[in-house]
Amino acid sequence: MKKRIDWDQYFMVQAALLASRSTCTRLSVGAVLVRDKRIIGSGYNGAVAGDEHCIDVGCYLRDGHCVRTIHAEMNALLQCAKFGTSTDGAMVYVTDFPCLQCTKSLLQAGITQINYLRNYHNDDYAMKLIELKGVTLHQIKLDADILDQVNLDQYINPD
Image (cartoon, rainbow, N blue to C red; front, side, top):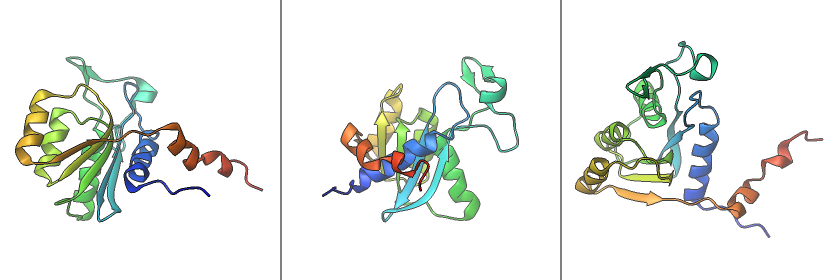
């Protein structure tokens, strides 16, 4: 009998699925905000709605950074702000360790746990702030067994 995936794996797979919507050519990132085992917001990295996308016209670089892209964590926070959903006491599941600016925004929004899949230029000051605020930091690993359990192949061309 197949065992259900646990909550951490479930939400991290959701973040990975969101990353597949990214319009960034440099890194695809997805983020899910969760409270009480319920998704309250989500986002992926990409351009402001209505603007051109990096996958279509290339990155708009300044000092080596794409200024067109809004990070996944910010898009998730902004979705909650837009629809009036409090993020205080929530946790985030994000495919890549948040940058310094996203870390500061997550902490200021009341996020109490940061769950991430991959390390990505982990900033020392971000780590210091996470420790200062007493936020739990948890790296989650997805293995082949989890991905086999998710098995999306069964939904391709159903009879």
